[in-house]
Length: 339
Image (tube, rainbow, N blue to C red; front, side):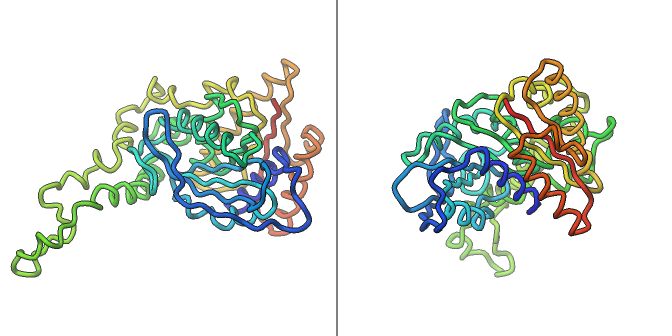
């Protein structure tokens, strides 16, 4: 995943390059848990890394369900080079308010976050988004909503259809992936639900001492149920066919609505993750073919097809392929587009 982050960040740095980058690195100002108000009043929280100097800088934004704290190293490095970097916990995750439910809030929350970021006093008005897996979904779903200040996206190792090759494969429920992913996501949800249940004072009177209710769930056993910690998992099972539930969050139903420059990469992978990226890859090929037929500005690149990619992206792809050969890893494929 670190290679994917490198590819995405490199392309976005080119797409929203800062004219203020100097040979000497900037001092850094770091803000933690900054409030980001959504249109329905829910407050999300973001960490901001920015140059500690006067001026306006381009924004690099990542919206994640996997804890924004993981962005510290990249945030510090990019801010030192003249970028404002924002890592935000999506709705219902870690420091952000609201209820967590996969995919459905990402278009509106992504739109609101992009426009909030663009309006910051040290922003030059250009916002690029980057990241992989579910973080790729947060970008594409935001792009479909057309936030005016979104300058480009770089979703990698992700999908464009969250029914086929994500939750289901050939009509079969992808049990291992779904249960493993859901179990991981549900841990933070459970912690949020039980966080205010503990009652050490009330538990003083519990005898014998072995009966002290550590989690104090006696009156709320439902907090550990699937319906409480992962209602989306039950909904996936209730919608085995590609119906309106899935179409409402489908990327490939709205490819024509993604009009910002985009670069996506599918590295070599094994097991179910290959199925996920295959959906985006195959759908993107069709989208590229349709756009080329209309003489639009999309470029497709893989090994041997670099001449179809813009010069700026080509240098990144050459470096990426070279690093793969040196490391002995399997080759990948990259798709670049320009609106």
